[in-house]
Every structure is written in C-alpha cells, then in structure tokens.
Length: 311
Length: 258
Image 1 (cartoon, each protein chain N blue to C red):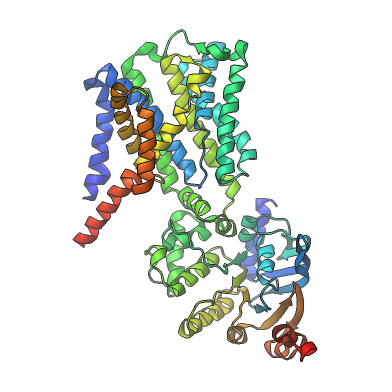
Image 2: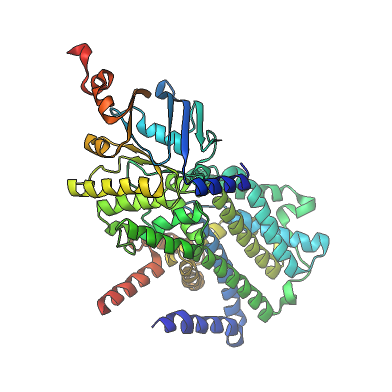
C-alpha cells in the first residue's frame, strides 16, 4: 500500500504531467498553464497561512514579478528565461524590505495592509507612463520560446514542481514545527526559543518570490503586461478559493484544489460567462461550512478510518 | 548579543551546570497599577524557591518579566551575569530561562512528541531527528509514555508533564513553574512533586514554583518568597515565613481588623 501511494502513484502523475502536451491540444495546454499559475499562487498563499497570517498581497507581488520580468527584457535585453528568475528575486527582495515593517502586524491588520500594498503597486505602475507604460502597459516583441507550446508548457511545469518542492520542504522540515507553533500560540513559540519575526520574514520573502515567479511566467508567455490584468483581483480570489477547496496546511491541498477548480471554471466560463465568479464564492462558502479540511483533508480522514478498521 | 557569546555561556553552564538568576529593583507598571514593585530576588543552583502570595500579588507578572513576555518599567534582570532585561524572549530561552504557563495551552496542531521537540530544535539547535530521540528519552524519564498520541487525547496530568517536558527541552538553568499543580488530584500531586524534586537535584535546575497549595510549597521549597501588591513581603524558610505576622496578615486579612 505504501509503495503504491508513495512511489508508483506520484511517478505516474509526474510522467503524465510531463507527457501531457504530446496528447493534448493547444487549448488543453493553455488551460494547464493557467492552472499552474494559480497553483503556484495557491501553494505560496498556503505556506504563509501556516504561520497563521492571511495575505491578500498575492496579486501585488504577482504584478511586480510580471512587470520586473518584462522591464528587464525590454530595457536591459536580458533573455526571457533569466528575467523570470531575476523577477522573482526582485519581488522577494522588495517583499523582504516591506516585511520588515508590516510583519509586526497580525491577523486582519496584516491582511488589509497586504491588500493595500498590492493596490499601491498598481497605482504606482499606472503613474509611470514613460518607464512602465502607464495604463497601456507594455508589450514584448515576442513571447518566450517564440511561442513554442511544448517548451512553454515544460517551463511552467518546472515552475510548478519547484513550488511543490518548496511547499513540501515547509511541510517536512523544522519550518513546519516553527510555523505551526507560531500559528497555534505565539507566546509559547517565543518562550520555546523560536524567533517569530525571523521565521515570518523568511516565509513572507520566499512566498512573495514564488508569486513574482508566477508573474514572470505569465507575462513572458502572454507577451504583455497591463496594470489591470497583471494586478487583477483574480490572482487573489482564485488561489485562495483553490487552497481552501483542496485543503489548507498541506502541499497536496492547493495542488488538487487548483486542478479541480481550474477545470471546473473553464467549463463554467463556456456556459455562464463571468458567472463563474459567483460559483467560486459559493464554493468557498460551502467548503468552509461543510469541509473545513478541504478535499485532501476529507480523503486522508477516510483513509485513516479505513486503516483503523483494518487494524 | 553575539552568537559566540551565547555559545560561551552555554559552554560555561554545561561545565558548571549551575545557573544563577538575579533580579534587581524590578518594577512593572500597567498604567496606574504597580504590578511588580521594586523586587530584589536571586536564586540558582538546584534551589527550589516557592513564590506565593494572594491573587493579584504579581507572581505571574514577575515570571512574565523574567521570561520576556513583558518588559519591565525599571530594574534589571541578570541570567548568569548577563543582562537580559531588554532581550527578546526567544534569546532568554536560549540562555536558559525556562517556564510553564498557568493556563495550559498545548499546541493542538502538533503531536505530543512534536510539542516537546520544538524546545530541543529551536532553543538548543538540534536537528529534527536528534530532537525526536531526545524527546523520547525525556518522555520516558517523565513517565509520559503515550507520546505518539495527539494532544487532545492526553489526561490533565499528561498535559502538565508534556508542558514541563516542553520547558525542559529548552535546557533551562532556571525554570519557573506557574501553578503546575492546579487541577490535579492528590495521587497526581504526589507524583508531580516527586518529579520536580528529582529534576532540581539530578539536572541541577533552579526552580521557581508559584503555587496556591501550601502543602506543595512545604514539601518542595527550600526557600519561600511571599509577594503582596507586587512587593516582597517575606523571604526565608517555609517555617519562618509562615510565622511572619505580615504574611499572616496578608493572607487572613490580619491583625488590624482582629
């Protein structure tokens, strides 16, 4: 049983995800890429949630990463692949600087501040017409890999694996214990030797870097950035809905949630244009009310019961 | 403080395995209320000091000041000669200031063993694997056998032991126990008293124990400090303190009204 779930099943999933473009058309590939973008955002949001802090700054850092990447290739002529990575690093550095100040806040004060910061970035970009294209945004002369679907998909997939790996690290290393302790009780964390601020800053910086990376992937594959699309509220609401649906505090949760909700939303878009947002809202409400541990939590509970029954 | 300095102190403590806490003229004001008033107290080695006093006397506030939950209005706290008055709580823990809490709050999202491991990992810097081994040994020494259970399945005595283990995992030289006996029956009391005695003598931990049950203080304390309205009223052996007319007055409403 363990070999099946630990090795064979993940191996099949990895193999399928790598060979996906060989048997799927361009439309399916583009859905997969969208799902991966949201998956990275959902994973990063979930890592910070492990500390008990809710961030609404996803779209802000996503937009920063997107703009940084495009600006680096337009102004400095750096190759696209490198701009995505450097864009992520720039976002992380910016987040670290801001984290020094805002990580002294907690709960809703922190959440609201991150939301406001994202909005401030958007307004700043809006008011930089010469440097950042203002309201019109910026257009790249060509998209990454000259639009080669296979390579673009595999690049996205690499980003997904990287993010899953990071999230797994935060689940299995001593970070898991530090973050969970901070979430459960900050006073206990302090008197047991945990430097709360240090851990929050590390996590905030890394997750913002992931969000910046997702932004870079997005802008380099679509070839443009605008304040409205790159800082869109979709990049806040959807990843959060996905993480909640899949199951928070786990790595599998946001992954499963992103795939399920991503596929559902594609179908919904065909039948009820823009109505899919209503459905997201409903999903969040239903999940919070009836399955607070999400899909993954529900499944692992069932497995545990089956195991206990077998014993 | 530099990390190397911390390391030196760790080393010194390991060599002497004796710690000394010194509190000088410590005062804490909350707006108009003086919660701790000019307290001078020093203890160390394997001494067990009972800290008693009526409700609101400032016992828990004193512990909060020493462990870094609050910062004092004035005064000084020295741990092994190092001034820790303005040091953040996690650094004090790493220097050997340990405590438990009056209101038990185990970390519900972690297993029992993980609750204990955090001290070994974050205060002493052990890896997860080593921390787990050390936690299991610690659990065995405390007769806390069900360490793989989730915290919600533990009895009150087990939770109290777990909290003590959590504090011990930080390798304290001075350990404050804030009403650990509350809610235990007489058999459990006896067990925990024996355990605390053993801890102080075998591991050379200086223990400051806040307690309302006088039997426990009588049994355990080498020395008793009585607080009233934030100030020290009496300091001495259990017998001497119990005969002190000021103490009797503080507890019983005393001579003035009789």
